[in-house]
Image 1 (cartoon, helix red, strand yellow):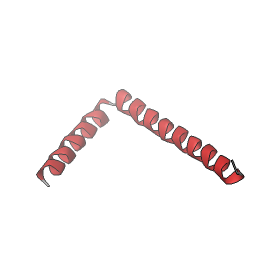
Image 2 (cartoon, rainbow, N blue to C red; image 1 turned 180 degrees about the vertical axis):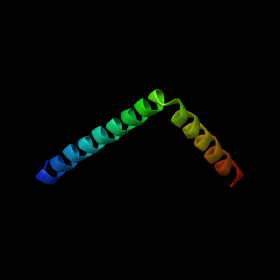
Image 3 (cartoon, one colour; image 1 turned 90 degrees about the horizontal axis):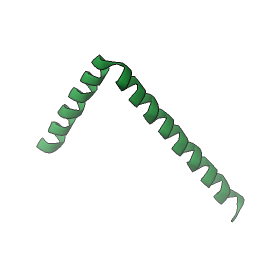
Image 4 (cartoon, one colour; image 1 turned 60 degrees about the vertical axis):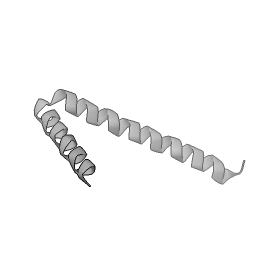
Length: 54
């Protein structure tokens, strides 16, 4: 495998780790803040309704 292939693998691994960290952070915020959780749930429901209607 050449150097570019190795760098791509490490880069994608770091990207995956950053995505996981963001996801965990968002879940922690939603768990700790009931108002934010309610607003997020309302947003998801409205978004789902819009997707179904389109």
